[in-house]
Image 1 (cartoon, rainbow, N blue to C red):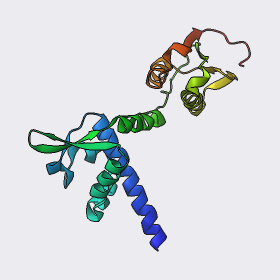
Image 2 (cartoon, one colour):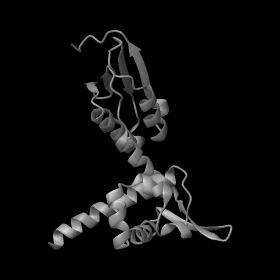
Image 3 (tube, helix red, strand yellow):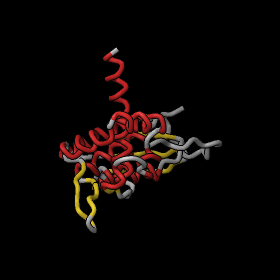
Image 4 (cartoon, rainbow, N blue to C red):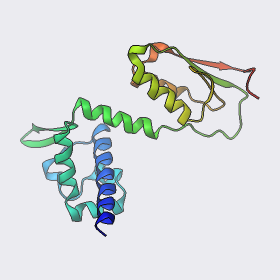
Length: 184
């Protein structure tokens, strides 16, 4: 029984952590007066059921303390009120959440155009290259070569988001073409 409670608590805390960071990343201002019941933006980012459980268990306060200890958030006094803010490290964590949730939109009819993504990202940017490559696979791109991926779906905005936020824009090229020989 104790394991079940721990897993449940972990899920609640994880949902609160994600909701809190995404809310702050979207520009929500959370002050001490709001940290207790009824945080509007945060409430929207967390499932209602998890929110109710979190309030009962005090999970929100412990999550904020943990995020502060991990240096993902900081407190700052603004107009006599303490305000919770994202740190640079917290902003990177929010970006990770946004990249994880990135999906391509399904098209009702194919426009007969292939989207070819070519990249030559240097070794010094290996981690960004690995994240980029794995996200392309996650988005169901067809891997033509190690650094050449193809899809039928429109993806310019998503590729721009990835390459700009990963700091690899100069190494990534988007090609729109009618024919790719080795794909049936």
